[in-house]
Amino acid sequence: MDCRTGKCSRKTNETDICITINLDGQGNGQIDTGIGFFDHMLNSFARHGLFDLEIKVKGDLDIDCHHTVEDTGIVLGKAIADALGDKKGINRYGDILLPMDESLALCAIDLSGRAFLVFNCDFTAESVGDLKTEMIKEFFYAVSSSSGMNLHLKMLDGSNNHHMAEALFKGFGRALSMATQKNPRLNQVWSTKGSLS
Image 1 (cartoon, one colour):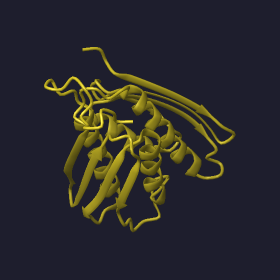
Image 2 (tube, helix red, strand yellow; image 1 turned 135 degrees about the vertical axis):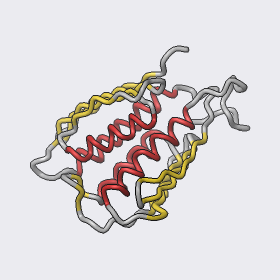
Image 3 (tube, helix red, strand yellow; image 1 turned 60 degrees about the vertical axis):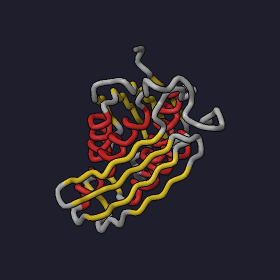
């Protein structure tokens, strides 16, 4: 099977980003956003989704992390969409309940081509490391919007903000891996409409 690889670059006055993702990888991440905890989360996403992921970002971190995190989500979503192509033969749906110590996250995905985010997670800390926790929702919104993904993320239990964030990113990786997998019984898009765009 040929590897399904997507690539997207985007340069603005605020960020300069290049992302490559291989949906059929081994979980290898080469990630440099300039935000240490964000790099850790993206590496967790890649490792647990078994995606090979390369991310290089230069952002205006002298202002804050907002543009870097949001724009990384935009570019990652477009790279995922590029890798999926016409979506023929994929499972389309993926879901998981993922525990991380005291935290329990639910992630459900439909690669329907219709973007929608439901995000229910109440962080109690303003930041984890150098990542503002309010930006986690913005990241997932950007990924969902730019990829045409219906994405539900819910924190069902948790008290440690590091664990909560990590459960969300790992869960996202596992659910996306499930949704993007090829189904040997299917040689067309899994929709009565005949299209997932």
